[in-house]
Length: 69
Image (tube, rainbow, N blue to C red; front, side):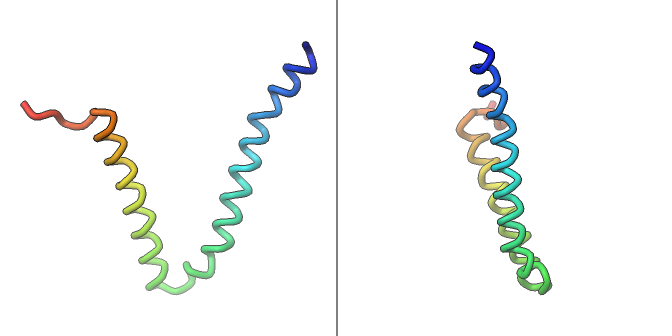
């Protein structure tokens, strides 16, 4: 049973390692795009638009928006 809990305790560490690896890989790929101001503005706009799209979609799906009276 001790070995079972030892294996279970490895999952959060695995999740953090995978998440950081994906973040660093994407940042390394996007870093050259941030050197030019035009592509940096476009990339930041794309990130903000994607975030707002996901936020508004989840808000509408979950019904947490302002309800009409």
